[in-house]
Image (cartoon, rainbow, N blue to C red; front, side):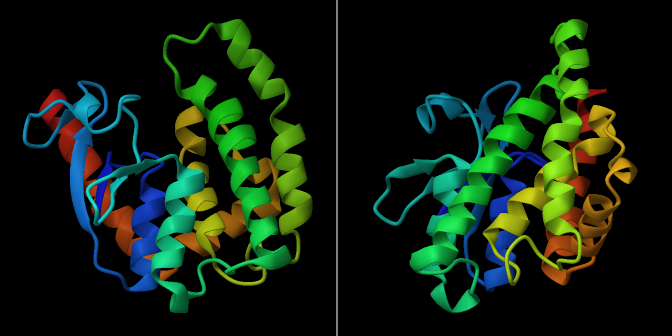
Length: 209
């Protein structure tokens, strides 16, 4: 497998999952602003949406979208415990993957991180932040993970919460969420993935300056 990623983007969740599983996956960096792969080729030829993650499977086909890529990685490494094979537990994981993808990733952080988004839109999004993060706070209060153990859901949620300071969202407003995020960042696989991608992110910024 080959994971196309952009440093500190949502594809970080897939890297975390791979490291947690102890799996072997190739990584190819993408410049999502220029839509170019590291070798200079057109990323649109890989993913017509020009977005990460994009996972090239062993048969050469491409799988996209976090809600598909993360479960696929978990299924490829079934002994990792990153996702239940079936039943209620898997359904709950899919529920939270959907919540993170729609309510946090797209509805909260994307507008706040978009430099071209109207201020009125950003103000509306901030007003509704407590609806989303408040729900998450209630769920995480007294829990170590989103489910009963570390899963791909935690990999995705940790990745999205990384964006909070850049979006002007103070997680201290929701203490259980802040404590959860700080706890996840201390996990060896998470810390490794974040350190590697943050170094690449800083290198990108330096190159663009």
